[in-house]
Length: 160
Image (cartoon, rainbow, N blue to C red; front, side, top):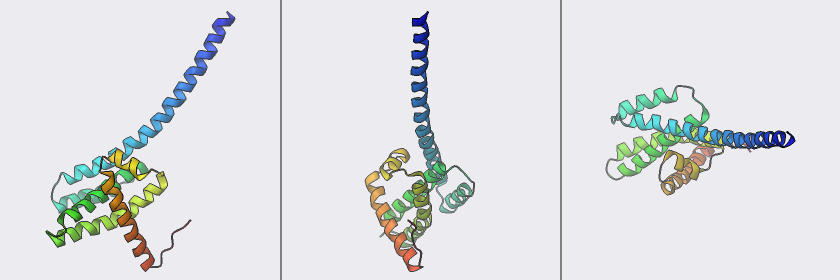
């Protein structure tokens, strides 16, 4: 009888440990899922394949209040896609490249805001959103520098 009771206690303790581990894993998976969901929203917008329609889709997508991880995935994918397209069109169609660069400039502050809120490393974000991390790191450094320059020009001071 005592051994049976000890067995139940040990079993319950083991179950509690396993459940706690599963719950913690679900939290990470939940954030990853939400980030992927945000990126998928932008991927769906890009399928419209006409700049005006893509823009309208993105405006509608960002106009809805969503959880921070979803917004991070959405803004990160928008920014990265526009940065890639700006580079792709540079030297071919300057006005198109400039438009994508302006879009990326407008999106990057939201990327940095959500990155800061969620403390997700860039490499992890790249893995989740499935973009080339070397390219994303290069663009990220570029755009962070541009953002600092723009903010300095208007007298913005970073907190912390």
